Length: 478
Image 1 (cartoon, one colour):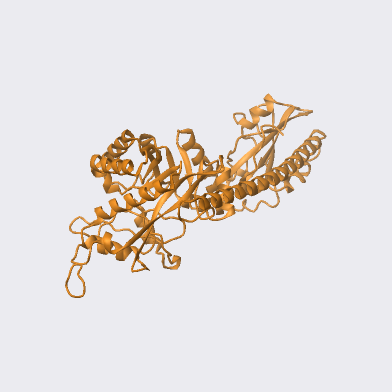
Image 2 (cartoon, helix red, strand yellow):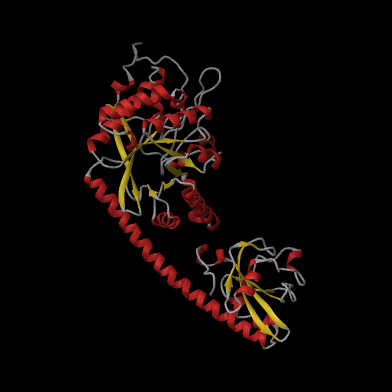
């Protein structure tokens, strides 16, 4: 279908409707509201929702006659409305330049904005939904060719277009040729969960690639998205659902999962696009993930293709990258200071243990540091000597948990124990893992101490999510 850019009222959004509609290929662009029309099995049933609409939406309306006040048919939908393509920039933070546009459309009638509900009720009553789609594709391609930009054009594709791929792709390829646009410059955005016929979707993708079109998976991470389909489709670009970025802004665990998802997709051979970036915090998260492409109101709203749009969006990107670099530099300095202090306190506690000072007393100052949760001592075979020494501010240790009483437990198979034996002169960092005492993400620092009873391994559990918003990176050795 298409994007209709108009002001939406966020207060009217029904989240249950959004959740349901998302299963049918709905895409929510930044802040506006959304609309989708879903087919019934017998006849056509309508669910409407005013606001923003994408070409990937499934549009079906209850068919009924649409006549004027005197019973005369309304004029064709294309001729009775004014359509204007607008384009939202897509940018590369690495190149710090604009590399593509996503095509959207604004609609009016007699100089008054038209809502999606009214527009598509008229189109459906006149049985002109396919004609409307073709008209908008032609409009987008014509507007893009007029700009003569050496960048990608992103077009959202209706899932029902995939049912008859040969005819629709031939028509689109001919429109590209007429507009002087090579198919390789056109990125077809598909929602991999929207199609009710996966085989037809794969056939469409195969034929689209044969025509030279690029493929992007839209809204990945929403609903029933999965990697099996992603690997079969093998898209050039994967656009992540905006909810992943929003959740990452407010939840450290969600941020770690987003970073892992971006890394996994890139390693599988696709570029990653993060959309819906609206503020500096979201931009910094996006840059930290090393996503390849960025899009959102922070850089530019949908508009015309011209030099002013390019300059403005690229200038904002450069500002964001510069600000993020300054934040990262300050974070690095703060983290280095924290790690230096942590190393000092571990060494001091170790010296006290070697001098046979009481274990809990030796660890007292160390356990007062942010993020430090537990200390324990292992013998040369990895057997725990005594119970854990806990941080006094560890408020999570309230309920019953038999795993806290771990005296005599064998940790000889753990990475941190083996690291300490292999690199005895260093304070070693384990990879993050879930520790048994509290089922929290943990990094264990370990070092070998030369005690009277032989070599012992001093271990310190740190919760990395408790310091620097979970962004602290521990080096292999301190």
